[in-house]
Image (cartoon, rainbow, N blue to C red; front, side, top):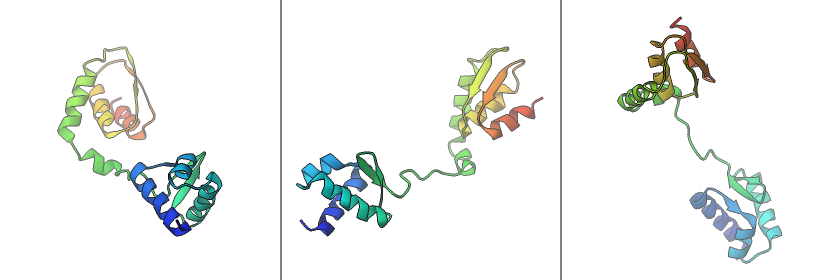
Length: 134
C-alpha cells in the first residue's frame, strides 16, 4: 500500500471513528507504529488531523456549537416544562448551583419568585437575570 493510500485510510478511519489509535492502525494497515507516526506528521502539517497521546483526532471541530441565541429559540416549551419541574424541588432558603445554558436560564427565571435562596452560577446571563430580581 502506498503512503497516499495509507493516509487516505487513516482519514477514512478518522471520519468514521472520530479518533484513531497508532497501534490499531499499524495492525490494520500492516505497518509499524513508526510509519503511522510519520503519516500523522504529514497529515498534521496538512491540517487534516491533530496528534494526541497514542493517536489523533480530526483537525476540524467535532461538534459545531450553535449560538446561545439560536439555542434559546429551540424547544422553548420543553425548556419551560423542564424548568418548572426542576424548580418544584427548590425550597426557600436553599442554595442552588446552576450551570450555564438555555434551559438553566429558564430555571433561573422561575427561581426569581423564591425568597432567600442563594444561587451559584458560572453563567453571566443567569447572574444578570437573577440580579434583576433584587
